[in-house]
Image (cartoon, rainbow, N blue to C red):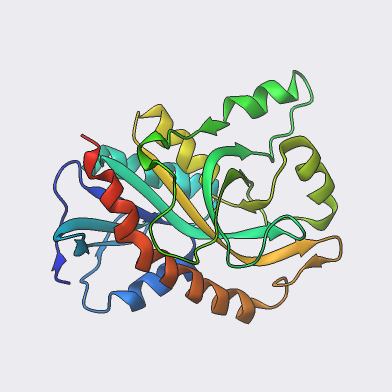
Length: 245
């Protein structure tokens, strides 16, 4: 799997947000020669997809909505990807999803917007995005045993809070949340860039708090497993994107 110093125009770009997630990616591609951007490292590799290979760029965009939005625009402006894929992790809501489930985001909502002068729902709707997944057919790669849930993913610049779980379930029907997907989807949508968001549930949050809160080791261990699986399944998803012009 040779590395490449850049990717051609309209290639597939894989955007990684959190630092822990990126550390796993670097270990998975030890021979890659990373370059730097204003946001983090990036490198290109030739990935085996079906009967051939395809140049894929992995880009570390940074954690949180600010870095996610800025790095997404940077990637789109520099490479004009025909498909932007965000691989990462998320926290699941206890009783709504199982640990290890892959969330395929159909819709993203940024929920930490507090509007007290106008209509709060109007402001929430402004940053909500319905992702076009029509090119995915049934939406799942052909591997057996993968738990893929096509659903809404909520984002905020904070981890899920136990006291907010009832509200998130009632207002949005939320099953999982992260920090960046809402910003990534919104910027991609504004640029007319096809976007695929796949996030694995590493830990659960319930009325008594989060099982990984205060236990960074658990998050790192589960992130290693989730990111490894997502990269292993990546060729199956990219193969479906070959029909995208």
